[in-house]
Image (cartoon, rainbow, N blue to C red; front, side, top):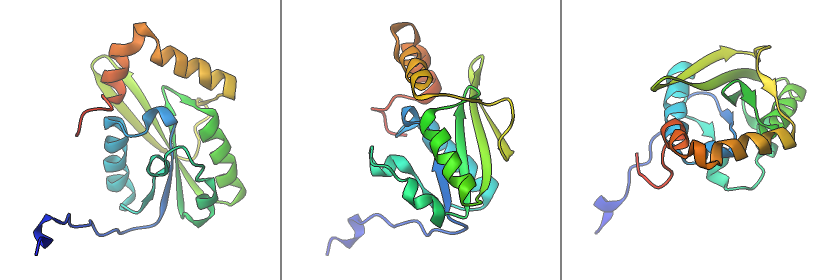
Length: 154
């Protein structure tokens, strides 16, 4: 009787893509923009998105994926992304990198096949320092602009 209230589930298509993203991007506007960009670039909306699993590890799903996309923030892979890249490499996955950076008042998305040499691989300590800097008082406005407000719907 109330079937019209049900949301129509979007049909998935394309290869299974594992999205390796820093936890700081979970459930943000930037994450949604990344998914739209990847759907366009890879011809797939069939994603494993770690943020859908909360803080549970999802690296056991990497072997099932056909494509692996590593997300860098301002030219840096966080330690979580580094760990998942190594797993993807061990399984011989096709790897792409999406570097998310800010230039003036816009966000740039640089999509490349493979892993560019200029991307810095952070240790857990360096990752924590990066997150602390982004979360600091001086960066609160920057954070909302760069990653979006987690409390707003898109």
